[in-house]
Image (cartoon, rainbow over all chains, first blue to last red; front, side, top):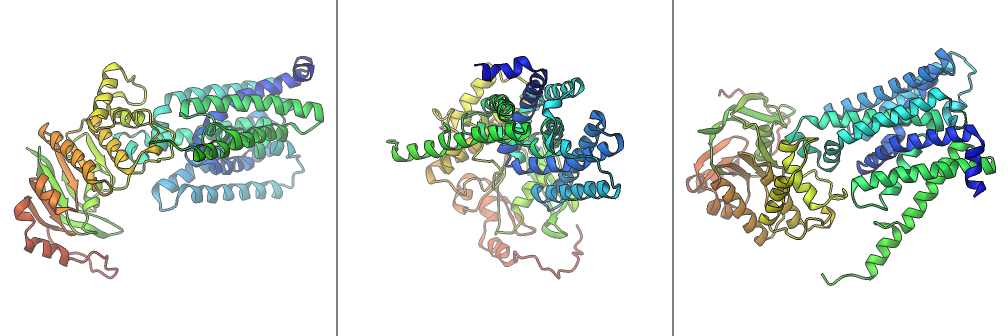
Length: 288
Length: 242
């Protein structure tokens, strides 16, 4: 018991890390469910990389400033998401290709700016996060983003589901299709920015994609899937932080590895459509 | 009353017309079949009516505020974890929108519609587990709840068996009796002759539109067939007047 609770009761930085990660769980995991259902899991990955140069530019101009890096990341992420969305909607190119194009451009631009400025700033924090060093401002930011994202998701739930399920139908009955699409991309960027403060730009997307993919194996409906995703993300965050504390592992990767373990178990033993569930169903077929 | 009026309408892709210089009108309450060879512009015409495609030239007038449209290839994602009842309830969008409550009365309508298409007992079935015919019934059910005065169907019976088709045709006839205007792209002349009083025969241009028996004459059909379906890359600019 002590192994489970003592780190959090004894150390303030562990408590802060846990609160931050739980906030991210509430924001990012439901987004991950939609990314998974829209076959956009890799899109999330691309957007996460697009944020890096923006955050790096903020870091260059203002040092380790929460607001500068947040704004830089948001601007870069939104620009890439909007530009890719525009190209998808008005040209022949599909979303995956247009997004890949823009995030590569964004990434190259960021690296170019950083190297020509010849700065020796340590970008390790941006890459791998500082979950064990979250200050009050960072925690407030993470909680604010989670709150906004839950409210927007609740308000746009129906159009979001319809946009995934049958986009052409939504377009014939409503003008909300584009709104839902861009609001969703905006939320994804917002949550990736939240995630990178804690886990870094490389790992942030893990809190989004892995809980979503895991939840698919445990729930039939979209609502329940989102709840499962949040729970998986929160529990894996605590587990990852404990692993990191007891074994001296880097905390960001430890959390993502804990999520990875949950995912692997679900792939094999999950209730819906997992390896075992499918095998069992196949061998015992029904009358009709 | 006229439900739809086409004025010198040209629709197409990359300047090649799929259908051009169409001038005709559809009466309110008509039950009209749209027939013609592959590449005649039938689906394109429906896309123009719902506003998915903007006219290159000409106009479509009198388009109803509410149109129920069943495309030829539905974009519906069959692997999405959602049940029959939820898909059908999407037809209520105009009434409930993004935030509106689906009350007891609306639920009763959903249940009635599901019964009307013969899917009782399958309300909770995930759509991934339906047969092609059952899925088509679900889509008809959703159309029904849209409660639209104008209903457009693009080859609605392409992949369904005899019994499903008869059931769905009966539904169409009933909607038509309720005063709704129905435009359906069809290929089987048998069904057209039996169930659709008026027909529009097109082959990149209007061949004939009117009473089904006279439109589907041997002469009209061979004229429709004679018009090639392929785009001509070197086609000159069309100088035809309206």
